[in-house]
Image (cartoon, rainbow, N blue to C red; front, side, top):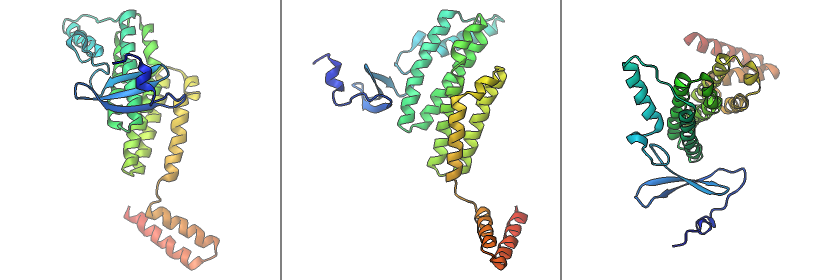
Length: 249
């Protein structure tokens, strides 16, 4: 069997600017995720740590440090992460990043929510325990992007159900979470220039535009049209119906 990856990738070429993902069945009989990159591919497990490793017999390096931090807390000891440990957690977080962008392409939005939440928890853990505190900035800076991806996943689930009003609410909540991050960081300039907020703002308008009109909104639109056409009797009828609907509410 040839060890040349070109034999494997010849029928699956890399295309710049495109995220190409597929699922395959591994030799162990379990489903795997493959992400095509310019120099080859990344293969990941569908759950647990993406590379399938269990550092220190834990599901992830984050879980290992969380367990140690709990033991230190019980002893009233402070648990601190040094630069090397923060770097290792950041590298592990990149694995989950590769998987959640792959899962998004596969429309596995539940998996995206799971992995983005895991990275957000890692950011919070590092912020709490990194010594010196400045080390946390290396991971905190990615919070807006991870929140955006989580928001996209949550809203996409609602759009698949055609629950437009709920999707709008999910996007609005995501926008507020990102704004809160910048406010807490006392970084108004970051909020003003945030590509994540820019994207979600544009998407919010698109979703609102596609949202079907309610019965009340349809009557209001018909009444406005009747007034414009000087069909005043019909406009009066619609006005009364609108008032009845509003009083019921």
